[in-house]
Image 1: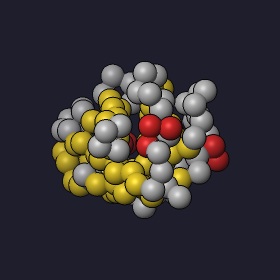
Image 2 (image 1 turned 135 degrees about the vertical axis):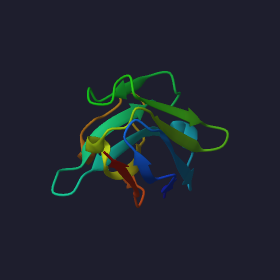
Image 3 (image 1 turned 90 degrees about the horizontal axis):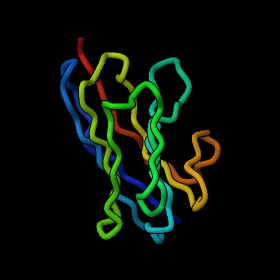
Image 4 (image 1 turned 90 degrees about the vertical axis):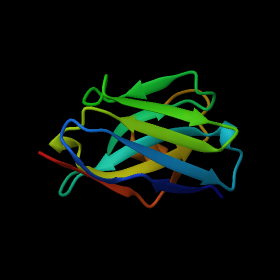
Length: 125
């Protein structure tokens, strides 16, 4: 069983930056594809970015391309989300997610088996 714990959320002004972290345990981390999703109040949970098990491939939602960067450290069993040039519309609860898909970086929520508890990101305008 894989457990995921996010950290790093908070309140930031528009234009600022935050770095989210996700710590994994309970599985072979290097076999996991990892992703970040977010859910704003009254909206569906949406895919933000994903990284393949090797770190060699990434997939970004159009809304965050050029502003957000995902990375992973397999030795530390960590995945990170660097968020720059934050906008008010980035305000949401951010969730770390994982699956054992070694072929693609899935974007549908249902494709992910493991989830963290979420961390709140609030961007003030």
